[in-house]
Length: 325
Ligand code: NAP
Picture 1 (cartoon, rainbow, N blue to C red):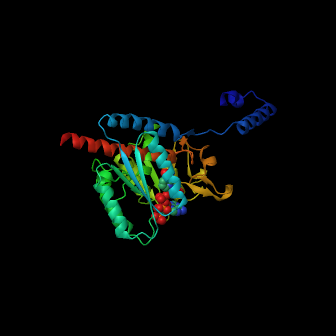
Picture 2 (tube, rainbow, N blue to C red):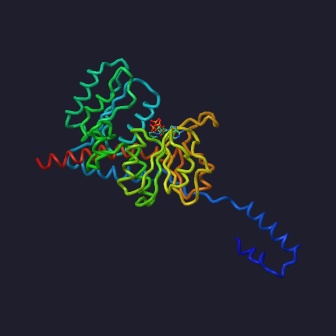
Picture 3 (cartoon, helix red, strand yellow):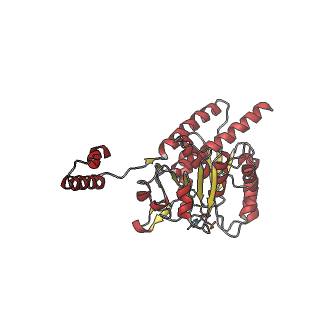
């Protein structure tokens, strides 16, 4: 477009022509659409994983093995029920058996422990998952620790977390950070040697994700609620992952061209009657950066497909062990 105005530097132009050309240039710049980022949708990523999941369960069925996930829910929290229904739907689509059990909020810790232990000892169950947080009357850390790494398909126990941090092969990563990594892999976003910023340091998302990025040879900065100059920290990164839980925290002015933004946040948007939104001001960000996930429609769609994949992986490993013994 600037070629059109190359003659602005023409020494033979009279001041009237020059003023006219300048005005035309300004008008063109104002009319031009701001650049739009590539949208990293979760749907094709989830579909690719689910298609692979199905092929793997078909292969396992020829070995008389049906991958099975045991899901425990304590109480009737609507977000747990919503996620449970999504898990059941995904499992059904790819031939994973999903056994769900709802427990009362006043269940005693030893009762829950006994139920979990039964699932641990059951050779037909390959993955175990429970929704958290548990009610305060239950010692969640103790209950998590009952799940052995081989069946801990969402990395709930300390042993699984330790294996992840020690970089031991075989430990299952928590599903949401694994979904972020899958999005980056699917869309071929280079990580090695790149600056990645993770906003949020929770045990479920931020911390394990920082380990996974580190394992992929990114240079990782983890920011949190006490971090200063968040805008500067974000601006310097090649990849910004927001996992904070604050609607529109990351503003357009914190971002720059060339960046990839992964928005893990899932928050009710006070400005739009509680409609769900991410941690990033999407409208502003998509005119700044190179690529961005929509939220909803991004990482969230991939998480449950990853959970199914990890159950299948657990079943494959058990089938391989059985084949050897
Ligand atoms: P969390 O446990 O509440 O952790 C939030 C983290 O963000 C904390 O580390 C906190 O810092 C940090 N933080 C809070 N306010 C901040 C601020 N103003 N500036 C910078 N950092 C700030 O949340 P979470 O479980 O990790 O979840 C984070 C978001 O991801 C939520 O929106 C959640 O709904 C979403 N999520 C999505 C999926 C999915 O599959 N898409 C799955 C899980 C979670 P401190 O440590 O200093 O308190």
